[in-house]
Length: 169
Image 1: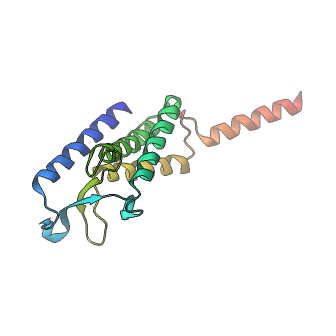
Image 2: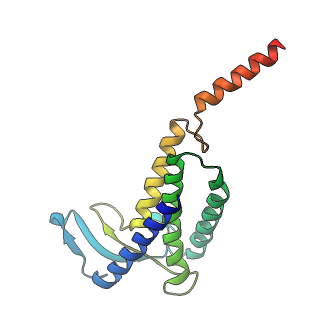
Image 3: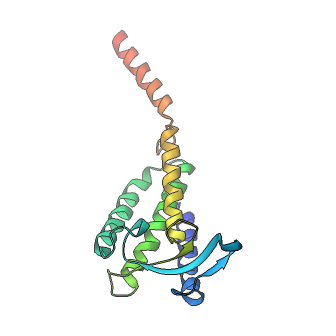
C-alpha cells in the first residue's frame, strides 16, 4: 500500500509541476486530434467543480478521509484492498497538498487540474487515482472480499456451521 501511495503521489505532484511549467490557462495544448487536451485549471471546488469556493470544506474532508483510512489500513490483509486504499490515499493526499500549500493561501489552495477529455471536466492524476481506487473498492465489495481477505460466502458458511453446532449442543 505504501508503495502505491508514494508512487502515485509522486507522479501526481510531478505532473502538476510539469503542467504549471508547460501548459496555459488560456491556450490549451491539443493532442490525438483534439481527443486529449492539456488545459491548466485551478479548481477551488470538488469533483466536476462542485462547491466552488468551499475549499475549507474539501480540505477538512480530505484530512478526515486520510485519517480514517490510516486507522482502518492495519486490518488490510489482501492485495486488492491494499491497492485500492493506496490509490484513494494517494489521490486524497495529492489534492490535500494542493489545498494546503497552493495559492491563494494556506488551507485555501486551489487544486491544479490539467487533463481534459471531450465532454468531461478537467482533472489530474489524483482524481484518476481516487476514481480507480473507488472502482476497485466497489469491485471487491461486490465480490464479497473483506479487508482481511476472507470471502463473504466463507464467512456465511462458517457462521452457519457455528449456528448449527450451537443448536446441536
